[in-house]
Image: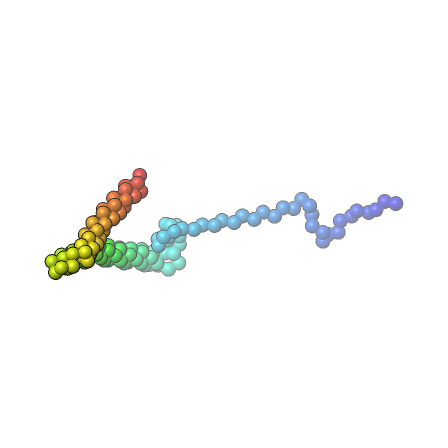
Length: 141
């Protein structure tokens, strides 16, 4: 008994192949690539100019914020040094005042604490500035 292996018309044919090609494109930043910008312009005349104007405005805005942050950090740094100096000098003068009024040990402790505080703040500031400069120098290369 031989079996009939005929194929029905609805069954898939084994020599058929389906190929799917997918193209993905992306870009980063506020300005699209020239081909896409040209397509925007074709769809909506003036769109390319509006996109470029928007990117320029965003750039100016970001640069303004960065400038304000730099000014603020500089001001805070200067004020920190001034107030640390005032605080250290006050403790030293307080220690001297106590020592001249008969409280030698408390005066010496307070004056020493102020002096140690001033010296340590300036040493720490100098070290951190050196480390920051070294990091920036290494980042350049």
